[in-house]
Image 1 (cartoon, rainbow, N blue to C red):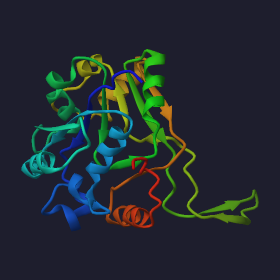
Image 2 (cartoon, rainbow, N blue to C red):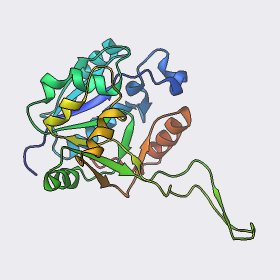
Image 3 (tube, rainbow, N blue to C red):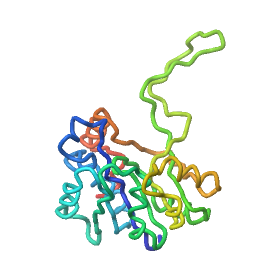
Length: 239
């Protein structure tokens, strides 16, 4: 892989669905296996040779600064913070980082999502199609089991938490600098900017069929901690 691009990580939200933890710490610092979830995200990228990380902070930004400064990162890895405002939407956070990210291709992802993703393959896919943006798409496991019915409404079977039939946004974006032309201070990245790019034929989807999960709720944090404790966390691809 050529020299990997910088990675921006969205770290500014309040994490309202995790209020058990986030009243006193920002969501990216909620721990999985004794390490903040954002530490895991950085490790996923670092394992694939990425070295330059920019945390787009907001809520409790001072704690994120302290974390970035005091954590012993892998050799050659640099983790910096940029305070993008307390209530800035995701698109606005990217817009505020334009000066830092606008020099070439850059990656962007969420601080609460982990995956056993082949980031080299993702970059190759992005460079091959030539469009402005790539989003990694995943098919998550459904929260509930489902019933199979026949045409007479007879239950023919049960499936426990199958994968969704639909692809969703899993983060792990790759962007060209021209994406910065469609993000502004008051927009949500996942709405107008990505919708505009899709409408212009400038957004492609990289399909990831392996493990992916995000720590959106307390239940998610329990699941991820249990996977880590079992010694079989699928996203742990580093030594």
